[in-house]
Length: 201
Image (tube, rainbow, N blue to C red; front, side, top):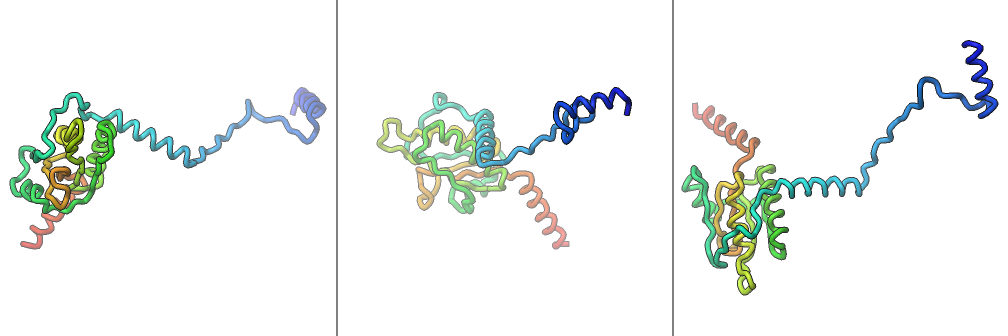
């Protein structure tokens, strides 16, 4: 250590005391404290994710939706959906794996709820869902949510088909929805078919 360094050490000791040592190097080392994951942080993250979903929501606003009759049967199938598959959906023969009840929802709430529902169904491998929208009989705008569901479901690439439910599942106030298989489900089907072929050999 040079005499200049010694002088600096002495002056530092006189100013702050001999038990305090000056920092070495060019500056203080900052150790970042890891962010604590509190319920508030989790709530903000969830809110941010929901906002992102809202921004991605491509469903048309109510102003562009054609009104349907409260008692009208809703029916839709994309080209390529097998007749037998659609018939089973129409007859309510598929297991209902997920449900969405839109009662007491505003149109905008229903728009976001349906968007999330279909998205979550495909992500979790749900093949058949049930959307309960009611009929709105006696209201100023009858079948408002039913009309929206009829219009919106056609906008999803994930939706292969839908049809008004059978009476035990809500009749004209509910709709069966057939969801396209996700990648994992398609792979399982492919594996099952391959296994069946192997066993036949």
